[in-house]
Length: 170
Image (cartoon, one colour):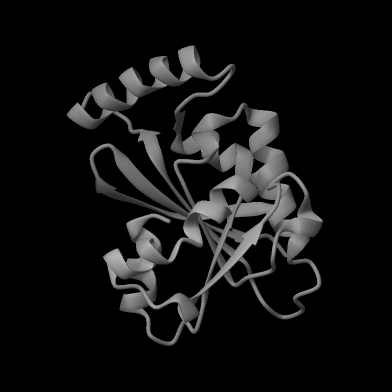
């Protein structure tokens, strides 16, 4: 469980519960009580669900999803499948819009320091994972569109990470 999940719940007390969704062996690690005690996190604020992100029936419906350092591990077709699975998991939520926040290394226009870091990570990802890579904002926009989402806003937050906010196209 990363720190951003805890920060979101602490910053927005109206959010009653966060969902951590991951593979079964990862979820088993999160359920360890020591982790919560060390981080001073209330267990009742979390629901842990294990499953496969490529299977829309396993993904719990939610108002928003945070995908931090996930999509850069996959090729374009797998990314579209992941995003489509999230959209499909929420198709029965009439009147509600689903938002996705993608936090990742995004190749920005120009030659900033963060771009050099992102380009280096791009090479590392290509070596470690077949077809994994960092993407530009336009490349994310195309992936999101193919999966039925619209890129709403991009927030450069901290070199080299940025946040992309996307919503379901109705």
